[in-house]
Image 1 (cartoon, rainbow, N blue to C red):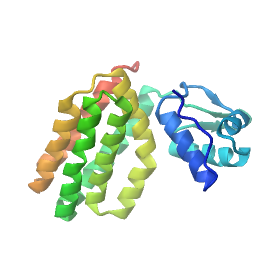
Image 2 (cartoon, helix red, strand yellow; image 1 turned 90 degrees about the horizontal axis):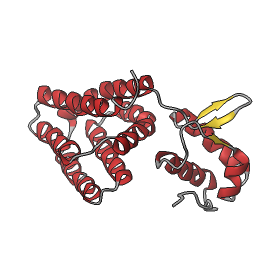
Image 3 (cartoon, rainbow, N blue to C red; image 1 turned 90 degrees about the vertical axis):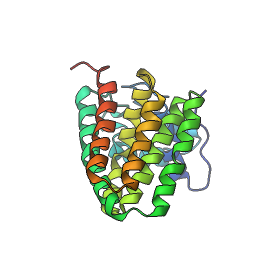
Image 4 (tube, one colour; image 1 turned 180 degrees about the horizontal axis):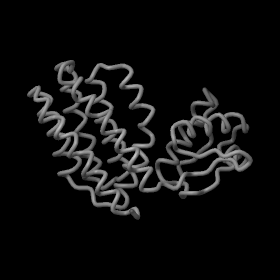
Length: 220
């Protein structure tokens, strides 16, 4: 079922952006597919202006490619793309872990623990899109626990590309409870213990194993 719908008239620009982002991350458009402004505007029942603005923002997020005289299209992720996303994410998340060791509050730890429940629910329902969303929401809470504003902004700039990679992983590779529940629970445990070495090691294992599961589906 299509997730594209008529955009709401309140804050049309923001709504168009949200609708297109959700459609891309949900796999509604095929890799390499051209995104025509006129066609999208007709489907969303808006003018071309908000669509053009949304595509520019999505290009900044890495979710579309905008080429001169060719318009916008969905990128074809290569192994190199995935490597770059995961290597940058690893660097950011290790820093987030180190900062969280020093700055996380009891409230942050409760928020992280609560964030496991939506992952469990999505996994039980075999809803791959929901698993991806809940996974990202857990990591949103993890970055918030670092209490580092510039780091959190860097994560937000990368988040959409991580989402695209995660959804690809959850689509082509088997996702288990051990991966999406136990590994996250380990992060909480090490953070609660204020064990920086163990936390950094757990972050490395969590992200490297996620990359390995996805990278095997891309040619070297």
